[in-house]
Image (cartoon, rainbow, N blue to C red):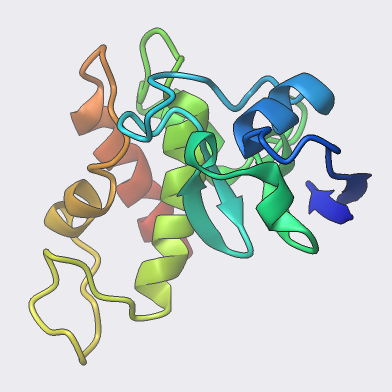
Length: 166
């Protein structure tokens, strides 16, 4: 059973009980995805699967046969960081950095959600154009916790990338 992770094909583990998080970290050595609460409450393990963000600690690897997974390592490199990775640095969107990979994966998918017109609880209109706002960002990023409290700078980093793309 193949799975594509960061544009590379891999075989899924034989053990059907292995979480996607443990597969990424243990089998593939992709340690950017963090194990936080292991209960889907903190968002440190957020990855992008087929364009949608998920908590990889709550998903079994075996369920992702044929899926395309993007981790923080697939978004950018130290030599060629993504726009969001640069913005997090420029706007001091992290302190300890533990939650940062999950925050950046979540923000990447969140920006696509807004661009695709997917409403959130903060959206004024469920059928019209979704306005990119601080309230929209905060609502959509609420599943990613930062114990250091860098939230305002995370929002600034996301807003900066959005402004640069406009």
